[in-house]
Length: 322
Image (cartoon, rainbow, N blue to C red; front, top):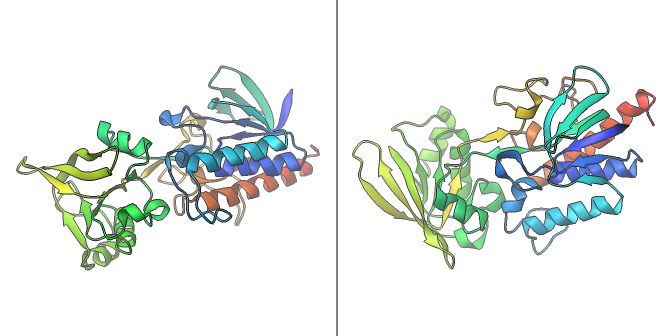
């Protein structure tokens, strides 16, 4: 049996694509994922304790609760879901496309929507992951979590030295003071204009030549500090903080594609038509963070998922596949 459309991934983009595809009578199959870099099905929001900026939730909503609501809505339209199953490999050399899932099952599909997301890069410290997975003050998205009360008028740390780190540090000065930028070298990698904007801000302090040894805190207060080691002197000191923000980049979850689709220099899928979701292979569409290195928000991912489903529906109709 050849599917009309398969959707890879179960974040906001994947579930939205599934809802739209199901309502268009495309009988979509969702490979829920969850095997990539140890992430849970549902993507990055599964590690977000409160989402305050998604319309329709005036009091905010727990990230896991929101993704379960997305899934429940897709199930309402009888979307077929392969739980805890992701794409192991694909063959896009001819149609119908072939997909091999992580359980060893092989599929064929006329259209493919890729919404496998992008995983934040972490330091992979045991303490970092402890507080991250419990929603206790470690995050990789300042624009998502920075406005939470735990960070207001408190010291926080941004880890990184590129443009993203400068942007997130500047953003966090709206809420926190001081904002530490922790960088392992004595000069930043960020563009000159981004450096100037950050360094002239009185609330921002750069901790040069420093690497993080450990994130400090407890289950009651969450993050309370960080232990730094100076790369020149080897001296160790503790710095009080209430939040620990990673800004060392994201890795798009595209390894399973084995280079069959065009990507940019960061590895994000390239969309080939203005305002559309078509990739470099006809019949393959993309939505969410896997094709978005700029915004990386739940609301923009959901919008892209909607567009991908509509694009797939129209493309299938053009092929005479109803």
